[in-house]
Amino acid sequence: VPPGTRAKDVRCSLRSRHIALAVGGQELLQGKLFDSTVTDEATWTLEDRQLIRIVLMKTNRDAGNCWTSLLENEYAADPWVQDQMQRKLTLERFQRENPGFDFSGAEISGNYSKGGPDFSSLEK
Picture (cartoon, rainbow, N blue to C red):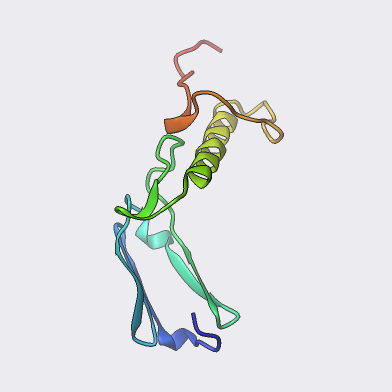
C-alpha cells in the first residue's frame, strides 16, 4: 500500500466466500476464498497509513480444516508454513479436548495432518 494512504482511498469487500481489495481505484486482491468465513466477524484496518490488515474468521475452525491457500488455487502457503499451521491447530484441538493438561511446551510429530488422530472414542 502506498505510504500516506487514507481509509477513504480503500475499498474492501469481505463476504463469506469472496474478498476484494482496491486502493486508490487499483485492484490489489480479488477472488473466491478457499473456504467460508463468518461475514459479521470480518474486519479490515489501515495501520500507519501504509499497511492494510484483514482479519477473517473461518466458519470451520477444526484442526482438520487447515486452508492450503487464501484463495481457491491462489496465494498458497509454502510447505513449511502449512506444516506449522497444521501443528498449531492440532495442539489447539488437543488443548480443547484435554483442558486439564498444559500443551504450551509440547512438540507434535507423526500423524497430525488433517487435525491428527481422533481419540474421541477412547474412554477417559
